[in-house]
Length: 317
Ligand code: BDR
Ligand code: CA
Image (cartoon, rainbow, N blue to C red; front, side, top):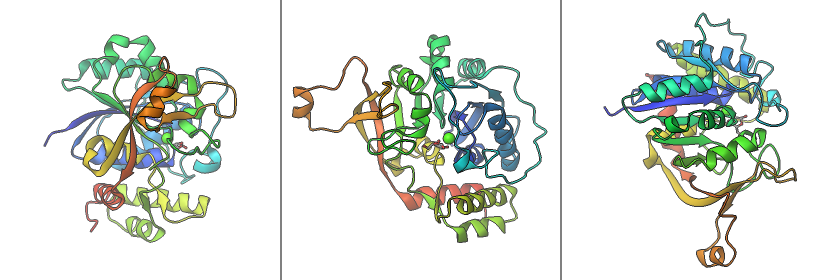
């Protein structure tokens, strides 16, 4: 089986946990490491949560590094109202015995990409602070990346604000650096993010499974359903990981994209130029600051849902 060598950058985060669980368990992914960043909650809590997810996945010795403690500019804006006081559903799981890697996130990214025999797919599921710092610190190493498949942005509405998606809104300057880096980017944003979901009934079946990973996934979904009061609940960030290994399940379109770094109401918006070409030619988007980005606009919801369920619960049918 051809494996995709992958690094995740996360702010775990309930839906980051769905993604880490999947990436650590899917046989077509070689998970080289996980870097952590301030986002849904503070970076130390993100590290602690991520280590617990790797335990639940039964993962081997995958390096996990601590990254940025705040955005490039401005203050942190946490999302504990969505993810719980501990950032991961407040399940009361004991701390992991795994050790954090001694290297910083940017150093771990550099080493893993330099050491990898195959080109690496970087999958950020969080504010892009670590990735921007890495691109600035080690641009020659960044050129060796195969591509970036990120959860962030929107070609339609926002969630953190009317215009902006949370990960980009949390650190728009970092997002602008990443989008303009020249590394091929696929954006898995809010146009599809909410669509693959798991119901309360499915979560209860997972909790009854003999497998720890499935029990953990089911408990997380139930906690999320309780907190938000809706079922089904989205698998969120996981969709970006699925896009990286199963592109045939997703429909994408190429757009010119600019990240709004102004201080106005559109701060953090990913402005996607979806106009007809003759209108674009009449009045082009700011070509200096725009990037050509592959944006996910549709997906096979049932196939994407089943892929997650069958990966974290081997007995799922
Ligand atoms: C993104 O924001 C976070 O709360 C989620 O983990 C996801 O990465 C969605 O806007
Ligand atoms: Ca996230």
